[in-house]
Amino acid sequence: MNESQFCPNCGQKVDAKAEFCPNCGKQLKVKAANQAHRTKNVRATNSQPVVTQQQATVAKKRPPMKQKSKIILSSLAALVVVFVIFYAWGSNHYQRNNQLAQINAALKNPRQSLSQYVTSDNPNVHVTDAALKPTQKYYAENYEKANKMADDLKYSDQSDDVSLVRSGHYFLFFPKYKLQFKTYTPQIKTNHANSSIYVNGQKFGGIDGSGGEYYKKITPLFPGKYHIVVKSIASGHELSADKSMLIDSNQAINMDIKTVNFMVKSMPGAAVYINDKKVGILNRRGAKNFKEYPATADMKIYVEATIAGKTIKSKMVNYDDLGFDDDDDSSSNVIKPEWPGLISQDDAESILQDNFNSPDEDAFIGGAENKGYQDLHTQEAKFRNSDEIIDFSMECSIVSIAPAPNNCSSVTYKITYTFEHDDYEHKQVLLYSGGLFHQVGDEDDGKQKIKSIGNGKVISDKKYDN
Image (cartoon, rainbow, N blue to C red; front, side, top):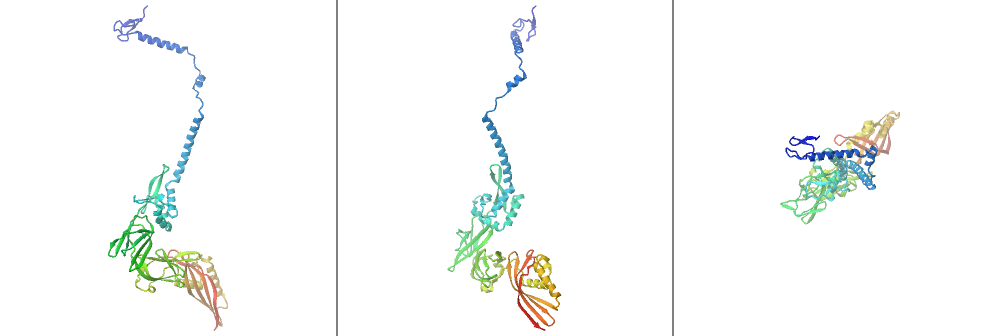
């Protein structure tokens, strides 16, 4: 019996063996051939042997890794570990506050290089170690200002006229911080047309001006302490004036030259400084004359002395504040620089008088533990409890007062005792040397206390009949 099927194109019933549809002409043998091919493939597949799980595992097993590949992977892993350690170290070492500490240390030490930590607000200024030495010199002498600036910059990018800025990176990853300073170009003024001006030894020429007012605008400078010298010739005489000063603005610097007469009095052997320059030593009487001395505006004078191996410095005296007549003789214009913590003669005499009569522990450094207080307390009790002494009195007179280190005063003084007995009067004079007073607190509201009464020796001992 002939099998029949339907044409996939027109739906006409056709013979199963027909190659074309008699109705629409659609080719029919291709589908049959495809069906036969699929049937053949299925039979072929069913005839293949079944692969077990163990055989599949063996088939998937990879060959062992080569030694070179292992070395490369190990090296990469080591590099990753090293980089992580390096980044952790760098993040800590180059953090902002650590860099500030390094910069601050260099800022206060003129022997260190500072240029690597500094930039300028003026792109035309060349930042060098030499240009920054005045800055380091100033902060070395005023280290508390450097510390305050460093503290300010921990929490802010600005401290007065100094900024903390980022300037590149360390090792590409860590921000590099620098101090950015403003630079200044002040004018130096003088009253002589033919003057030569020197700033830290560098000569600046080409002075402008007229009519007794001459000036020179100097090149940009970093803030700091500078030594300025003006040299001139007047009436055939060589004149010079110099001063050391802080330059931290564009304010004009007056270096007019005039000659003055004055005398400095203080401790014998002390060194005299004018504008931070040593100009002489006080003689045995503690005096030195200066005649026709070339002076500048704001001339500063002080003295230094070495006592007990320590150098002490007097307070600064501004010559212009003294109101001297420059034409007067030097003996009329006497400068007596004050010493920090120095006690006056009246105060020293009063304190010693009171405490030799009746010692008060509050008047002594260390209170009742002070040896001088204990000695005077014992001595007073001995005098008052003596059966032979009816009454006694004492007088104090100051022989000399000299400055001593650490806001102290060295005092030499006499104590005269008068003891009344039944039939005679006993007078005894003791000379005390090495007495020390110490100023406690600041100058305005400080209090002088006895640190040591010194060592006394009898220089006179007489008895008089009543």
